[in-house]
Figure 1 (cartoon, rainbow, N blue to C red):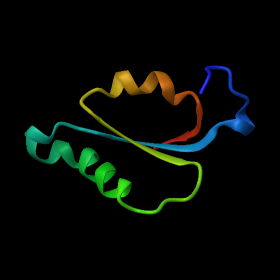
Figure 2: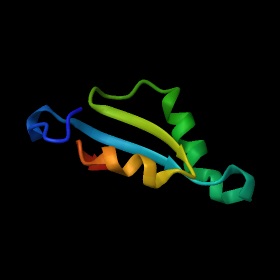
Figure 3: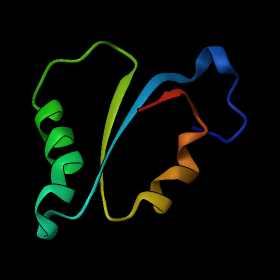
Figure 4: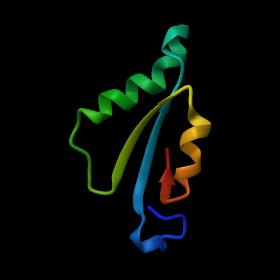
Amino acid sequence: MPAHTPVQQRAKVLIIGTGNELMSDEGVGVAVARALMKEELPAGVQIVDAGCALLDVLAGARDYRRLI
């Protein structure tokens, strides 16, 4: 989505799973994101498995109304 998308046209929710799977429980965010990707979610909800690259994903997060 363009950086200046009107709020009413933005996707509603972005769920970002972060963490390092190699560091035991730090990978829980990634595991949750992957599990949610297998589920049928409401329209307007998108999921991203960011792994350890949270900063790379955050730039596009401004295009969403809610961030989890």
